[in-house]
Image 1 (tube, rainbow over the protein chains, first blue to last red):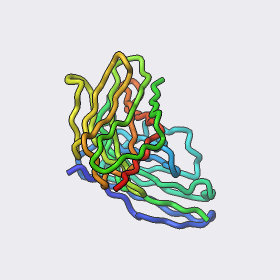
Image 2: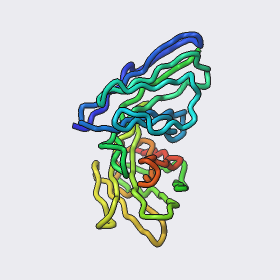
Image 3: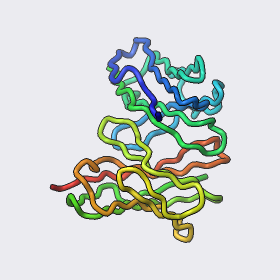
Image 4: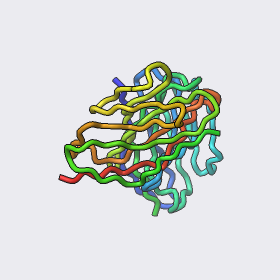
Length: 114
Length: 114
C-alpha cells in the first residue's frame, strides 16, 4: 500500500485564523515532506522531516509551522496567512530521506485564504 | 545544482495516437529520475523511475521512459493514448547529495482529442 492521506481536502480561512493541515502514512516511511503548489506550476518544497527531525526548511515564512508528532504523522500549522498563500499543499513520504528514495504523494489540501 | 527542463508546455494528441514527452536534466553525477502524473486538483502519482541499470524503464499505465546519458534526456512515451491520460506530467531529478530533494521540471499538460 503506497497511500498517503491528507485532511482536510479543502480549507478556507481568513487571514487571522489558525488552522492545521494533517498528513498520515502507514508505509513505515521515516521521511515526510510538505510541498506548496500554485496553479500551473510544479510543486515547491517547503519542509523535510527525517526520522521525526526537521532536516530541510526552504526558508519558509514563520506563519507556516511544521510538526512531526511521530513517524506516521505530519502537521502543518497555519497562522496569519496571506491571500498569496492560497495553493494546493501536498504531503509526501519516502523510505528514509537519506540518499534518493521514491517520494509518494498524498492528494493534497486545497487552501484558500480570504 | 540540478535542473530539469520540459520544453513542451502543452501537447495535444488524438486518442489512440502515440505520445512522447521530453525531459532534459542537468546534474553533475548520476541522476535519479522520475516521472509523475497529476490529474486536475489531485496529488502526484509516480509513473516510473530510473536509478541505474537498464536504460529503458517500464512504468504503470503503459508508460515507458528511456534514459540517454549522452543527451541528458529522460523522455516519456506511450504507444497509444487513452482519454484518461489527459493530465499534467512532471519530470523530476533527485540528488543523493541534496538530502533527497526533488527538482521538478515545469510540467507538460497533455490534452487528448477524441
